[in-house]
Amino acid sequence: MSRARAAVILAAGQGTRMKSDLPKVLHQVGGRPMLDWAIASARGLGAERVIVVTGVHSPQVREHAAKLVGEGAVATQDPPLGTAHAVRAAEQALAGFDGDVVVLYADAPLVKSESLAAMFALREAKGGMAVLGFTAPNPFGYGRLITDSEGRLQRIVEEKDATPEERAITLCNSGVLCADAKALFQLLSMVKNENAKGEYYLTDVVGLGRSAGFFTHIVEGEEAEVLGVNSRVELAEAEAAFQRRRRRAAMESGVTMIDPNSVFFSHDTEIANDVVIEPNVYFGAGVKIGKGARIKAFCHIEGADIGEGAQIGPSARLRPGTKLGAQVKIGNFVEIKNSTFGPKAQASHLTYVGDADVGARANLGCGAITCNYDGFDKYRTTIGEGAFIGSDTALVAPVTIGKGAYTGTGSVITKDVPDGALGVGRARQVNIDGWADKNRAKKQKAKDVK
Ligand code: UD1
Ligand code: MG
Image (cartoon, rainbow, N blue to C red):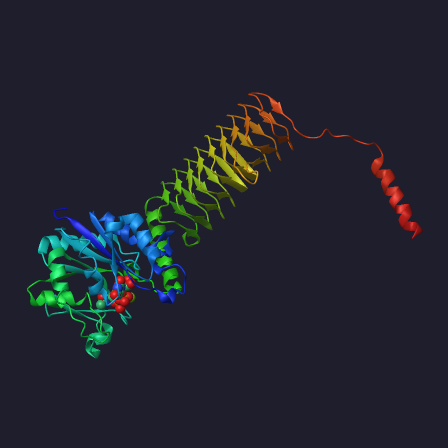
């Protein structure tokens, strides 16, 4: 990278069509707010300064952005007078910056890093500016890229200002633009609002640049990556586009999915090769899966680190703070939260493990549960290596089961069990001979009398 890079992210829109108390750019795609996607793209490009332009109507966006980019990198546009006006609002925050700047939209989370890199590369090689364009079969609503006979970009015209001939053009503007920062702000100062919307259009810098001898190069992307979100319907479309991309990437990196369309990823899901994912699996944020593991059907997994060769599900729920070693086996209707399992430990059926450390090769029987919460505080359970927890054991934390120890089926374990011992905590069984026969005869007689 030869020149310093910066990004200006426009997030001043109101997003009224979302009909939400949550500002639009904080709605999530792939489990991450759209604004965070734009910031991540900028950082991925090596942008040393990332400025977020917010509106006065949403202090929540300002606060959120400040946490990610710092208070000084959040600019305010008041009132919103158009995209050129919005970029100008970032000028002060970018004071002293010498290099290239890219303008991104906080409501377009799926712009590919390859496309952005291509824009910077073109600019670096040829000078001038670069825009991200795309061909839309139905271009209605988008700005159109007007090229000359040699295919060079002359200007961008907005839908509302376009002639019928210009409207027939299908090469559209995504809004993403990259330029030398100083040149861009100079051009922006010349933008006027004499157009159908009475707004200051960022897109006007292209024509103004051309008059000043600047060329703007076009990088062509796909419509799916520039998709802007204005409504819940478009949010779902963006989510679907993200999931398609993520599923493809997983398969290309060696993950088998029997029905990819029923597997849902998060922006940060990490899966090693030779993992098999059965149908209907949901990954929330923070999941990492080791090589060769199998995630069986109907699992809900978030904040979990799953070891190599582990087998999970069907119908298991792994919650944040779960860390499973190699070849762990977790079966159906098992819930695990904030707990570690050593290699080859297993819980095969109907178990709740919360705030526990389970040693290697330990086995939790059907229906075993940790009682980790007394309504006020949470307590830990420790299960030693190779321990065997009998079915339907209630482990009342804090409690420790020693290495290789057993607990009797149906026990309520309130005291530590030493290494190698058996802990039994249940009432002894008593058999009363003949009781059932006598009882039945008595009840039958009473019924006959009636
Ligand atoms: C813009 C482009 C258009 C392009 C389209 C792609 C301009 C003039 N037009 O049109 O060529 O095809 O995007 O979707 O740029 N914003 C602010 N402050 C403002 C106005 C807008 O922050 O004063 C933000 C919005 O929140 C949004 C983005 O800038 O994230 C784009 O604004 P929008 O009004 O949606 O522009 P379009 O008319 O869609
Ligand atoms: Mg728009």
